[in-house]
Image (cartoon, rainbow, N blue to C red; front, side, top):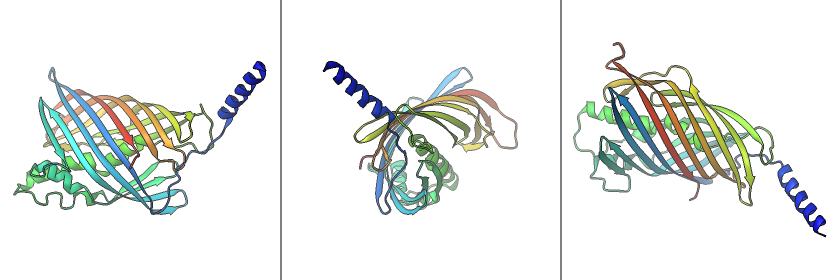
Amino acid sequence: MKKTFTLLLLLITVSSYAQKVKLELKLQKDSTYYLTMNAKMDIDQFIQGTHQIVKTTITGKMAHKVVAVQDTIYDMDVIYKNLAMNMEIGGKAMSFDSEGDTSNIFSKVMKNLTGKSFTIVMSKRGQIVAVKNTEHLFENMFKGFPPIDEQKKAQLLTQFQQSFGAKTIKGNLQESFVIFPKTAIGVKSVWTNQTNMEAAAISAKTKTTFTLDNITDDNYEISGTAIIMPDKAPAYKNTNNFFMRLLNVAGTNTTKIKIDKKTGWITQSTVAKHIKGDVELKKTLEEPVMITYPMVIDANMETTGKN
């Protein structure tokens, strides 16, 4: 009897590991799917013998409404429901919140960014194909502002476009979503994908190895490890009246994700990233490089898909 029971358990275990599943998004037209993000990033710049550290936390809730389904592609209208940012620079802390006191000029900017629709195009395999119409986010960004000179206004616009522009949104979302394999897989199956990362003055490619760790009643549990490598030389970006870019990019990325079995949508995602490189700084694009210094970026992003 004991041997029979042991054999039965073994057969059940082998059967569960042999089960093949097709991982993909199964979203419904006119349905809305939510993501709540909490992204923390520490930047350490070692300039002329001194560590200059900038700590940033961005939180927000996004609503994704599926407006069209075309073969293997979803078109989604997306809005930020709320946004907040906390920054610490040189020991000074600043906080901005779309739900907070909008007498704070930056909180007013956050408020003005919410409720504006832009478009995300995503494949059923979880690939972010395109992010479009993000210029709508910045329409009337300065509505209700006190008088502000045009140079300062342009500077603020550039900074917020770097944090909430199409490339940054695409990169952050792609790190949260798994690009699923093309074929059905079983528990402990492994697959590899390569993506490009472009944000601010960084251009890199990321090679990620994913593993289907477990299948529960409600979720697929997936882990990933990635290597970040240099891509093409990035263009210089205007930041606080200087032009900068990050070269010799290298780093690692680890991911833990739970995917809803019915929809393929994220239930929970955690991404930890470590990147290092060398910053080149110029006063103008025509002038030679003023200074080169090392930069280290440590980032952690937690995403949940609950309403």
